[in-house]
Image (tube, rainbow, N blue to C red; front, side, top):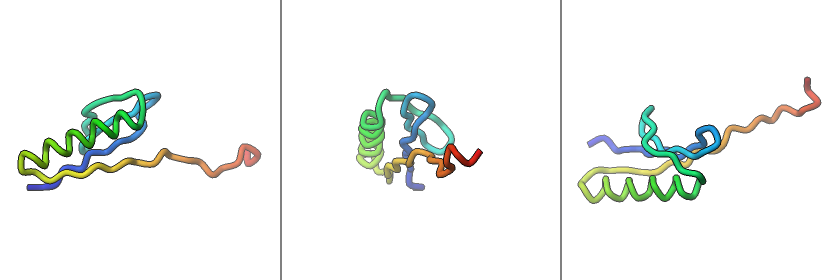
Length: 68
């Protein structure tokens, strides 16, 4: 069985949990989204699957405001 990768990442003003390109759930905070993802991964593992949770870092710009 292919392992499932549940990704926690910012989605607009909220945090999302996705698998592949499919958004599965939204939460108001990163901690809530990570809890949802961990719970889903545990359920998948208990049913015989393999799953892991990946928390995506927020995109950052290293461009200075003075670089315009």
